[in-house]
Image (tube, rainbow, N blue to C red; front, side, top):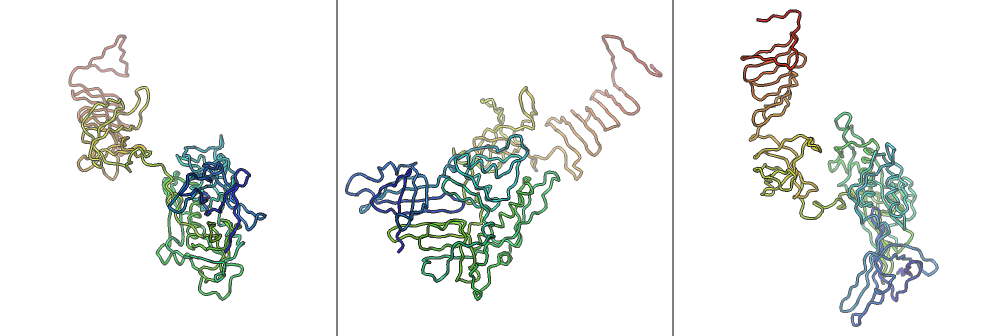
Length: 556
């Protein structure tokens, strides 16, 4: 049994405790380091918890946990902040339980909205932005991953610094590793390609207590491509293909007579019908970001194929990102594998270290609820756009010019603000208020069902458009319920302003301008001149002189 010496330190001083606690320490990539200490404390038959009363164990204090086989060879295996202090008791025992998290926990608690820019620079390097985010929390930043993209601006919307960092790193398949006062962003591919194993695990050795190994084909793809929006050409970009990657390299001490064949992710992908996986964004992405997205997805896919864990004798030297040589199983599992997590468990039965390898194929955003709650959590939110029917006019006493709208999904009527192509100060804007019975599309600000907003109206079989559509799509215009029209004909290049079929102003491109009313009066201007006609009188009146001049003037 491996029974180590454990010491706990607070602000440079060793903390006294009468009995060794049970210790559980977890270091995992893309997660905040965690530790739990359980001390015997208190007596069910007597009042008071002595250890719980010590100031060193108060929430918010920083503790350092050291471990070793003697006082002279102590190694720090965890340092973090006490985030939870709890007392537990039963009829026979009582405990003080402390939960600690690494100091990068400072990055996880506060949501913020920031538009990250670099002064007057047109673009900024993403690694510079992320380094500033880390350092703003009093931590050292180490972004050794080499490939990043540049941005005009990088927007962090109402998210914690930790979620913002993890989301951007996850895009490229990078791993975030937090240690004492330092946050590193590492490309696991660089570690794997170096192929320098620090430890060896051989099946059959006495030092392996538990193991679990698996090969999972479900998330493998033979090829991975990405598509984005090309704003210049108003179309999707060409596919960007990911570079394939081998997640497990042969071990230096690999046996030549090992049974079986190494797992082939491409063959597994084809076996489940996933020859090609395409990721698509409907927004423009830079070439670097689109390629990074493809490569990152491929990296996660390959690292998710082989997953598992070993339980070994306690070892404080093993760290996430170390490469371990695994042999003695078969060709599917033998090889050098990168460690994604380390867990130390210490108790009366000894000290054990669990090493984990492999990762989830899912994005960080899928694994974690990082977005803000609908309606800010003030009440149950409403998702997506809704169909509404305008109700009878009612004056808005709040002066917001809102419209009463029946929402069938709600089974009731709500107030909704009205959007416009233009609205602003000085009585400026376009005013098109929908009528009772009109079908409208309604959205909700922040998914709050109290904040309805009309985005526009829709035609349908019951409410057809004022002009029948055809393949030329030449007619555009504004048509009122009283028959007033502003009609544009792109095919004939005419513009008409009509109050009725008999009263209009019509302009034909380059040929004729005509104005006519219902009293038989008209003005026509064309290449031959101007013609004024009237079924009644024509009166010309001026406060000054009237001059009529021409090459020939006929008065009849």
